[in-house]
Length: 155
Image 1 (tube, one colour):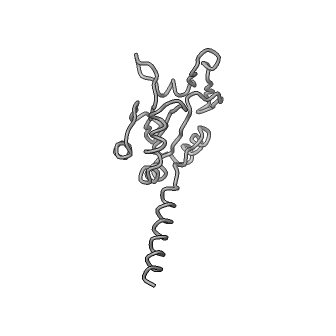
Image 2: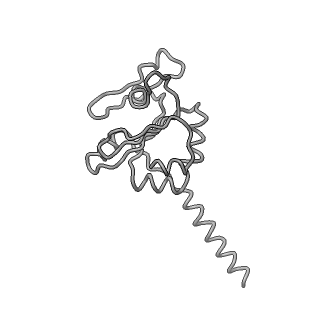
Image 3: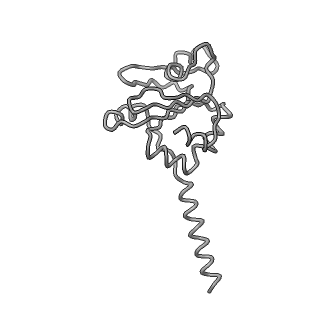
């Protein structure tokens, strides 16, 4: 009887742990972000990445799956993630953005990440994470890998 009780307790713990780690960030599209900001302003996190970026993959795997990070972002922020090489046309705030480099570069970068994530006198590099206030004004930019703890501190 004691073994059955312990098995049930352990099974419950495993199920609860699994369901908590199953949560994901509620990434929005640019269109959804624009609508959400009009309805209820919140701070915004924008994450630019590419399939070939090793640090981006590490962020996806280790940081953006962290339960505390997921809960904090989903509760207090709107979040957008974007592959910088997308060929999608994006309309945001009445402006149309495209990937003009698609025909001429091996790893073409879309106009939107170039506009929001570039640094003066430096080559565009990934990963790029941008933090905006409730008025959609850039509060901070990060151009490297960070841990879940570092991201929580920045949020």
